[in-house]
Image (cartoon, rainbow, N blue to C red):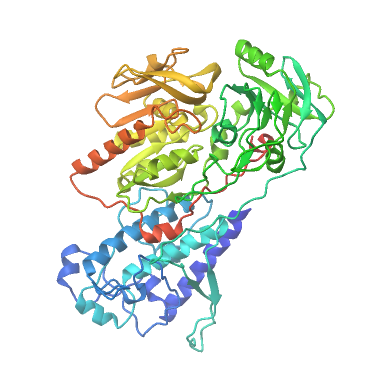
Amino acid sequence: MWHHGLQQLLNDIGEDLGHTSQSGQAHFLSPTTTSTPASPDNSARGAVRLPQCSQKSNWTAEVTALAGSPMAQGPGAGADQSGSVVSSGQRNTSQRRDIEQLARVAQFFLSSARVTIPPALSSSLPLPLNGQQVKSPALIFPTASESALMNGRPSVFTSQLLSLSKLLSVFRIAMFSRLAINLAKPAFKPAAAMTPRMAIQLRFISQATAGSTGRKMPSKPTKSTAPVESVPATFTIRDGPVFNGTAFGANANISGEAVFTTSLVGYPESMTDPSYRGQILVFTQPLIGNYGVPSNERDQYNLLKHFESPHIQCAGVVVSDVALNYSHWTAVESLGEWCAREGVPAISGVDTREIVTFLREQGSSLARISIGEEYDADEDESFIDPGQINLVKRVSTKAPFVVESPGASLHIALIDCGVKENILRSLVSRGASVTVFPYNYPIHKVAQHYDGVFISNGPGDPTHCQETVYNLARLMETSSIPIMGICLGHQLLALAVGARTIKLKYGNRAHNIPALDLTTGQCHITSQNHGYAIDASTLPSDFKEYFVNLNDGSNEGMLHKTRPIFSTQFHPEAKGGPMDSSYLFEKYLDNVRLAKSKALEYRDNRPSQFMLDVLSRERVGVEPVPLASAA
């Protein structure tokens, strides 16, 4: 297992730290320190004293990407790249924020691995990384007299940063990392009694002037097949009818929950919506594929222009008629070629009206697409129920990533339960940078470092996400931060305040569903994709219904009576679909700005350049896998 190799790397670093601290070559990482002469500044704060070294050290660990500042010279006053003088206070403020953010990243990776930290390494860290709440590290910044006594050695801040960098780099190696680590023998000659040791040299490559584009994650190839055409295929509904048609996608057999959408356009967006993970998508529109499939072009925020995630998320596709000869200026391939490349089977030539009638009367059912010979519908083991699987775990990012809005003053923490690209775009295009966290991240422990919290859409039964529900409940108990949720995020917020969810008979999946705003009496045409809803009668007294579905009377939103917390079941970002309710993003960000202006203490929560360099710029580890392996 990967964590065994990770544990060995940590042990090796611990050995190196313990050895070099005895030799006097790396006292800055040793837990043993000797006091320097008293300083009015540090004495008043009761801070830990700076370590003393018996000789000048050859510092082989270099960190060159901390807000563009020369870390080897310590945090004293100096000149920036333009030659202007940078005050110690300005640099200290930036460095404090940088190391706090780096510590939080290290804490996340540590909480994701079954390893222990060697004492020689853990004692050199500026704060405990054992799942407890991250507090501001006790950073030590030397006075001018102390800087002279240091004789060119780095500050305690630098040593703390190096320790965290060593720890973080190991986790990044194990988890999709491309961090450059150079192993080389130390430049100094050790004493006769010493054994030569390897020194770890970390180099975070920064582009402080031009701006970083973030590191790229390795992509996992999908199991593509050659497109199948004119091959018989079967769509079988469990305990229901069997439909014979023709395959036009991948040569593969799959099963899942059969659901239908009445959307006329937007099939690339629907098929890549993570909320459809594990479902066989039946289109009621008679002809699908006539404008082909666009390219994976990205916009100025590094977000996909034409898709809601990098891959097709639905398990299979069912259409009445497919257009393999497409025509559109953005198209690069046909629907059949795209499905085959993504490993998704598809069937055409079936009566989708009869399928939808059955699903509407009997409810959403398990189904199967079989390519070639007809599959025996009596074999229950051939049907996999995605409702028994935590699908959110499959679609959520496995490590934090950041989407920067240049010049933005707001910083939003987004809980990724299967976020759509256009939700991210709706936030960053309105002046808010977004850091995206895994669905089970303990957001209540770091909420004070962000201006708002957002919970995204996602697939499946919300009761599978008990960790998220607990974290949101703790967040609302301990913080007054503005919160907004969409779709599954709406359901998770409701569960966190004590409400209950119900499964709809066949769900609401369309781009033209009317929802009534109960606060204004206005009706909005909304885009929806959900199979569960909130039982409005179970909402606590401090919440009220916000929107209601005018078709079936189900709940479409809730609003806190006194706090800046609200959520919607429908999708205000609407891609595809109408933009009637897009103003809700402005309402949320207005709540964030108002809460920030009323805060007793101003906090600059913008992501630092160092954070932008360290984190990925896209979701991590979310390639589709068969449901059988996800169970």
